Length: 85
Image (cartoon, rainbow, N blue to C red):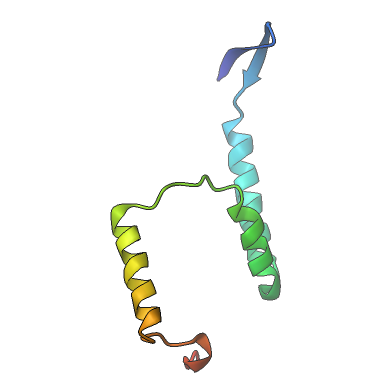
């Protein structure tokens, strides 16, 4: 698919390479699958920067409010106290 846009008065041809984008996405998935578990947090924080920021939905705001109240009341369990085995 081809489209034209104008940039600084010059028509620039843009070629949408959906198959190339699909292949790149698959390569990224494959790379993530082999990243050492200890590095996943770093990779997550890099990738999350590419996500568009959105305002939380009303039910998300309510869930955050309830969670903060539970924290204040001490109604939480730390990760260390969970038997992950």
